[in-house]
Image 1 (cartoon, helix red, strand yellow):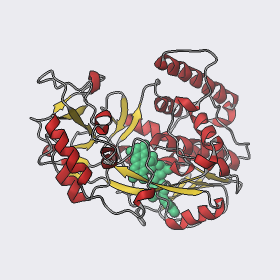
Image 2 (cartoon, protein in one colour):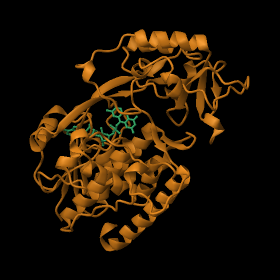
Image 3 (tube, helix red, strand yellow):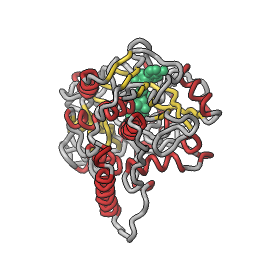
Length: 438
Ligand code: FAD
């Protein structure tokens, strides 16, 4: 059989390599770490999570929950490992990041038809290839992609939240609770009164930020906006965002604090917590000074500071097919964040599709396009059919799927109906390709 090259063993590349190898097609998997690092990765493991340990909502009323379920039903390696290494996180699926990545690394390393090359590629190798080098693609390969696609490459900035040592949190000041007591009480909450909030707000908006190339032109992920940028939009803005107190009444007093900072467990043993929504671009010393103003964090040890990085993605509507094959070069596939899908799970899902189609190309089979009624298919459709003049990376969501043929007023009920339809469409699709897809 012909073999397939996969470049980058991140969320997308690991999933792609798995989908190819499990179909009996040999894989050459190229990963530059640890020989060459990225500004956000810290280990040499495959599928390292560079920021939060949360893969977001797990329930089917949320589209990213549906996306996960579709991936489970397509035998996703990322989902196998995520489920095996889940940590408590209310309605979300969060993972113990180290064993999560370790299991994926071990699995791919153990497959006889996967050959791992720890090296940076600076161009496209001959033969069927999946490029999944992520938002922090090394500059040489980024140039090659730019040359291939013409001028349709953009950039924007992205930020990660600090991680704290649990032992340094003042447990007398914080309380354990999840919002509206949903699920188990997985969050530590730091309550603020109005004066404390105001002092914190003032310190935050006047704190020193690290330099970036062109601050004015920065664009952020929605939901990954630096906390200081959000704060600068107005004193109340954070109270409707990460510091929202509703549903977080302090069980010791029964009262709702003026503001609440939430800490989310970051590893299985609970020795690390991240500050929810506190992606930041503050200088490290400033992070320590300002975040120690949060009640309970007066003496906190920050084990990983928040950081900000460049992020690159292509103008997929102009250069990519919904099979994730390049429109510019046959048998060259792209997957992951660089295609304009946004998020860990979305990246892995695109890797799944690119991997399936790369394997099919090696087997001499026609590529498949997942049905638009599935979230996997809706994402592929969206990034390849969006308006190229305003193209921005997209998270899984129900808004990009075809509407139901009848009206359902309640949003949750409607989403659950769409999830039912999606899983039925996936089953039919898998049945139709039964002899080839497995
Ligand atoms: P990656 O997981 O980054 O994998 C790419 C791999 O390719 C890496 O292992 C890299 O070392 C390797 N590589 C790069 N260039 C080469 C080369 N030339 N040759 C060989 N190997 C190469 N998403 C979320 O859902 N939640 C978050 O909290 C979140 N935070 C983020 C924070 C930051 C700082 C960044 C940059 C992104 C964040 N994202 C987040 C977005 C996105 O989900 C992740 O970046 C995700 O890892 C993307 O998956 P990927 O497979 O496309 O890329």
